[in-house]
Length: 364
Image (cartoon, rainbow, N blue to C red; front, side):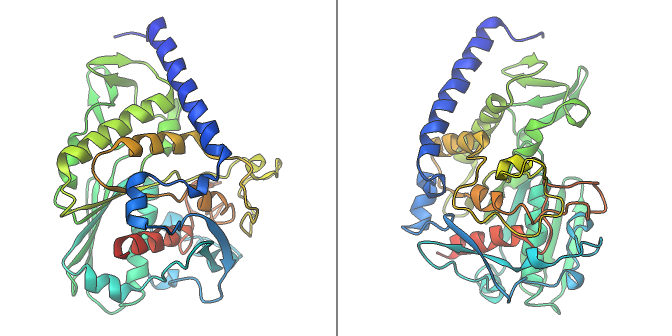
């Protein structure tokens, strides 16, 4: 055990430099038009992730007061958010129409199927959203909800459709040992719980940035060695590489479709959209420019690097840019949990669009 050696620091510096060069080359093009090769095979010629937000009076897709599956921290209307315009925006790709969500079509095609979201509270956001989107079409159907440790399940009993949420902040293992809490970059024992699904939707990023009291681990472990800390982008790359190895070894594409949800942005710093004195608080409309001032996050580059090397087909739900535009869609001070929440998303809201894209990708 001990701190990293000087040689390791040098290798990490080189690693980050390579990523930075790749990031600059990517950002010089239209980052919205870049999808992993596996995603491109599924999406065909249409780029659903390059577009704009348009006002749509027919939105939202469901009424939050009649959906029993919304976690209170996402129910912004319940906690007094005074405006509702953030619920009224629909994503419109430039190059093609995006199919509208049809829950009856979804329930028919996925009767008896199992769909699992694997990740942190943003996966909870998306899990709640899809359940509400389906429920709004069949409000009288029998449903059940169970929660056991990390696993939550919503079942639409008349259709045999099961939605699962497996909560894991890092995808790789976080274990409590004698030395303390250890984040294991090359271990993924929890993957046993993900087997047998028809659809897997993975997500991880936000917790990789946490430090101080918000950091849930004491050491990082790789190849049996413990480190007090590590460059977080490097750690993220190593952790995602372990996840990719798990997918390659354990997923049968004939049975299971795999998705990775892109980096969900935060809006705590108004300078990201050229309003330095602002945060997401009191934002009532999206960013309408064609190029988000903050540019492409480095974490997006890491995800693309890993997905470009994975052998099994994984569809990249590249929601980063379209989500960056939605500075208006956070709970702000209306979550009942956090005084200022510019990282999660109100429901109804942005995660509904993530699921519209998921629906389109599943049935394209």
